Length: 161
Image 1 (tube, rainbow, N blue to C red):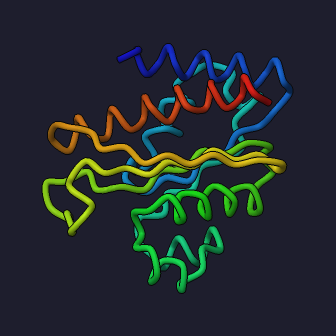
Image 2 (tube, one colour):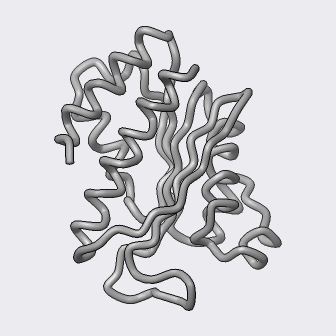
């Protein structure tokens, strides 16, 4: 796994090259992506804001995720990751967003969604991409892998912009 700070710096360079601003919408990572990004000096030139939306109510109130969508798919789903990423675009001045929602553990598993299940969303005004992965390890390991994958995915998403 690539170093998180190195990934965050690469994201910053990619965003600056494209003159884009980023916002994060995080549930299972609890602000870890935004924290990694703001560790980079000069991040204010390409980072707009971060939403930490741990509860379903906060997802609805801050990111406009429909309660019916949560009821239909559960809060750990690609559909919710997509809605979170789109909600971050709509409620910020960002050009691109990344979202995470998952089960970091040790509890919280449900049928079909074991501990380590994480859904990601990457969005720009004209496109969106989602993924669902299952990571191994304890809570800390799942969260670190999630942050790294979110940043790697963001780099890939920006390459296609």
